[in-house]
Image 1 (spheres, rainbow, N blue to C red):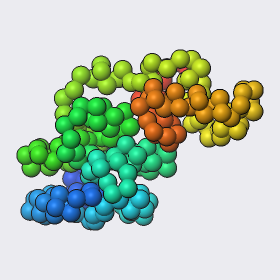
Image 2 (cartoon, one colour):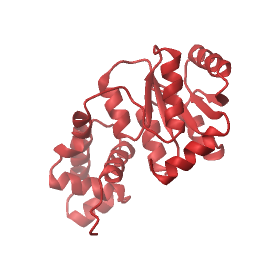
Image 3 (tube, helix red, strand yellow):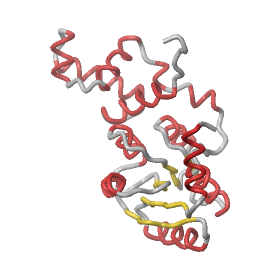
Length: 223
C-alpha cells in the first residue's frame, strides 16, 4: 500500500465513511439509504438524481465515496466518469449497476471507477465494496484483466492516436484542420471513425479514455 492509500485508510478508519449517492430511481435510493443508515460504519451525506447535480455536489462537498447508478436522469455513468476526469476532480467512485453487461464493467474500469457492484448483490458485498474504495483500494468483480487492458485504444493507428493526443490538448476542429491542411469536414469524418472505434459518443469521453490510459501506463525509471 502506498503512502497516500495508507493515510486515507487511517483517516477513514477513525470515523464513519461519508457517502454520496447519485441514482435516478427513488426506490433504489431509499433502499440504499436504509441499508447504510442501519450499518454504523457509514454516513449518507446526500443523494441526487442527475449527473449535473452530482458534479456540482462533488465540487463543493467533501466525502469519501460516491455511489453512482449507471443510468442517471440526464447522463449515464460513462459520461459522469468522463466529466470527473475532464474536470480533474479527486473522487473515489463506486458504480452501482442494475445491468450485468460485462461491457459496462470494462468501460467503468477504463474510465477510472475504483469500485463496481450490482444492485442485486447481497448487502455485505455492497458494504465491502464501498469500504474498500473508501480505504484507497480498487474493488471490482472478477474479470479477465488481460481483456480489460486490451482497450480500444490499442487498436488505433498511429495517426488516430496522434489525433486523440491533440484532442486531449484541447485543439478545436478548426485548429486541427488548419495545422494538418485538411478541411473541417474531413476532421469531423476522422473524429467520427475514432469515436466509433473507441465506442464513445463524444470528445470528452474519448479524452477521458486517453487520459486514463496514460495515467495507468508505468513510466520508465530512466526518464
